[in-house]
Length: 215
Length: 215
DNA sequence: TAGATTGTTAATCGATTAACAATC
DNA sequence: TAGATTGTTAATCGATTAACAATC
Image 1: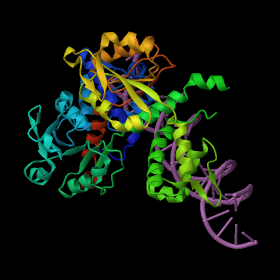
Image 2: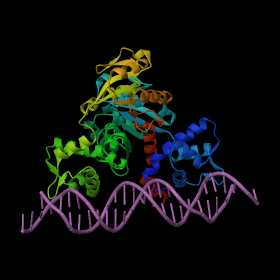
Image 3: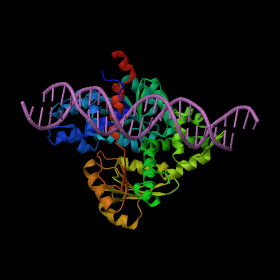
Image 4: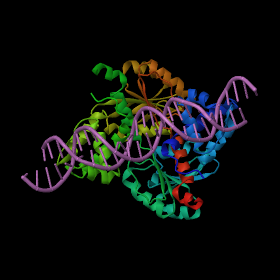
């Protein structure tokens, strides 16, 4: 079906999905690319180009049906199926993910939490108990795991990622501050918080304001 | 000084900084763009282009001095100065940020935590006590705050952002799932976790493997 | 000096925007 | 039917890569 879509387009899909979800909540039935473009502050041209990568969801003279387009984009991103997720590293960040009710609503269900800290043994978060990392292998043999979130220090993340891949997990949501080296069939999405913070810092130091002073 | 640098370049700076930091730890003194390119899996050309946006940090026939380049990139990103940060929303995610020792090492010092939940009143995280949100204004009048991290539900984030901007905070690290509308002089960097997860989900559904089956 | 490697210009590639014929 | 708006092709813009003269 769809193929060769650039990551630039993929990154925009969740944002379309979010705006369409809001329109849906507001009971808006249809929307044209130019109306949506005004709301989202992108060009109408880009919206039409992006959507047409996946199919002609609109209708000339009418625009797009909000509900339909929302569902289609959801389907494209796999929102119509459940993803079983485990979280490795049950510290603050891991617990934050486990407590995030919205993920479950989106079909990302956390079925396991793992850590090496014995103090966490027995602790449960939203009904999911924290297991020790050495139980991981057995757990993976008994349960289908679609995604593993790595919320542990970078020193351990590389080794754990290798272990996961060996045990058949082939999608990793990586919060550790390193670039994972994985086989080609494994999908990795990284969230590097400190990179994000540094980008913010750069933009603080170089905001328009400041530059005017220079010129 | 430097100006009109594209965000594509800015986004890569933290990664250069990370690799150079690792080289520094390994006591590597100099590195050429082609060596670095092999490690980072980007083209040497891109590295040289990126760096030359900010100045000629290298030397023909020699390459780049690791320590020097590390410091320069750090300086460009503002790592040479302290940033006072507050976190609004002291739930799991807010606490995770507050507990993240590395940020402080990078010069991002959390000087305040705020929440609306009275149950958190009196709680301290790494020596910083959680204050009630209605104390925010007074706090901002007494303290210099460079960055506010928003780790609260999206329902409240818009209003809080407006309040912050009014009170003179002009950099926001936004974790709430909405696009903040702020005046031009305010810098916003957003981390949308569910967008990231959806992008992962898309890439799971459309990995190379699967496509081969289609063709 | 000869070899290595930068800084920088030119060429290519890809992504965004504009334009408009097709069509609801 | 006339008006609106898509889908899609063509034009533009920007980012990446290649090439090479400058120079350490």
